[in-house]
Amino acid sequence: MIILIMTQSNDSGTIEKVVNTVMGVKTEDENQSKAQQIASTKDLDIKVLFTYKLGTVLQIGIIILAFWGMENLVTVVNNSPSFPNWVSTLFAGLFFTLLSIRSRIFSPLDNTRSRKTYDEIVRPKWAPPPLAFPIVWMSIAVLRVISSLLVWQEMNQQFLVLPLIAFGVHLALGDTWNTIFTVERRLGTAVPVVIFGPWLSALIVTALYWQINPLAGIILAPSCVWLTVAAVLVFSIWQLNGKEPLYPLKITPIKD
Image (cartoon, rainbow, N blue to C red; front, side, top):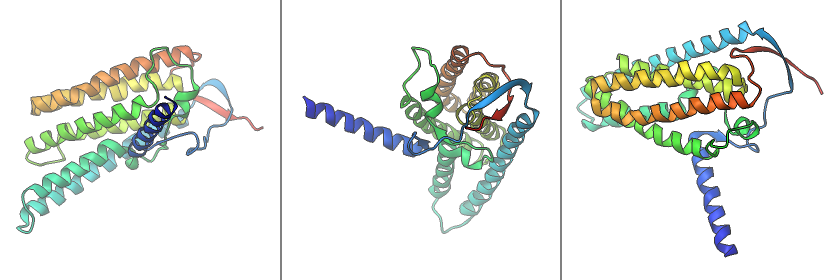
């Protein structure tokens, strides 16, 4: 019995390590927190608000530039007799995979994926365990790749089209939310951002995908369900942890 339990524990630890590696989630030991004790005021931090907006806009611009590069690459591949027809689809699939799993590489903001914030804050009893998040996001990443490929093919293998650009905007908004919630632990600011950012944009992208290819919209729909759960969770966490103002506060580091 003891051997069985140890084996199951080792298997669980291995699965968690693999999932965290794929999704880039760092554990407490791998990621020394940059957070310091802070004294909050009730004043709006205009500077950090501008930083969020600028970082999001820059990431969207970089993603669109990457779309432009991929569109030119696919054109070259399709016009070259040296490549079979499936090569462009392979390149597009790899690109959408990178975008779906590691879109934060295009963000100028700190988008470290860490469990530290989620582990330390007060959570509702129904909150999913930490390991559930990277597993669910891996599953959603697969759905994003498949649905985006369907749209890309339906749009004559073009990347610079409204549905895919909206998808890029959705990813950028999600990464900015991660900076606000996970990295900087601004639980109040995270509430309106998750609603008007990742959640709302997911609905828009799903609707746009469905208009181009109904199957693509259906495949992407589970991400909307998950983000609805995530938005409710973020709101519940905010309620359980002091209900700080729903905007970024000016903070002052406290020296030991």
